[in-house]
Amino acid sequence: MKLSYYSIFQLLVIGLTFVLLGSCSKEPEDIRTSLSGRLFAANSAEYLANARVDLVRVNYLKYAARDYILDSTITDARGNYSFNFSVPYQIRHDVYQLVCYYPNFYSTRDITGPFPTGGSHFNLGGAQKYNPELHPYAWLKVKLNFTSPVYRFSMNPAFGEFENTVIHYPSQEEFVVKTMGNADNILSFFIYTPDSSITIIDTIWCGNNDTTFKVINY
Image (cartoon, rainbow, N blue to C red; front, side):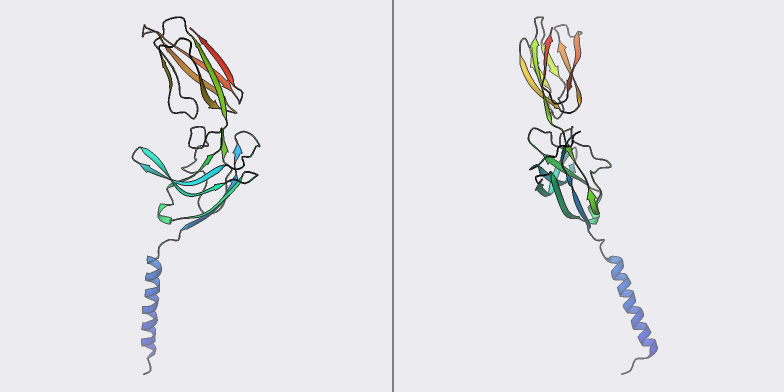
């Protein structure tokens, strides 16, 4: 049976309509990213070999943030790393980061790591270059030399640390805290005397990677 030109035209219109509807309902494609770079020690040309680098998507649950590791690698002898990954279009606005670990260096999860810009260290899509940096530890040795009554001593969190140094009824204690290398660090400490209205507040300057020794007299 031969079809009329009008029938053929109707079939073409119907077919084109299905094609257009199908294209409108098609899900956006995943965002493919090729990310590479080198891991360096902060403020230097020293690259970090055999360091662990995690590619993570940060999940925020109320007030807590947890990493969902998408991939992990180890830097080569010259500190190079690379990732090839896809991100679903629907979650392209989530936070994606690199988390790097190296012995005696603060990881990027600590407050000394490079802070994200606009929620991420890099952009999604295409070929991206990013060179993360880690800050090395420096060490601060503190000796307390208290001869006057003191019921509490505290020091602000050292860089990368989350707990205060607190000593009750101190006298001749010694302790060590980690500070951030390659930077001018100022740590505050507080001396609480029996008269709570008198609180002595002072600071310790810690420079670069050298070990700093500080005696606090009171």
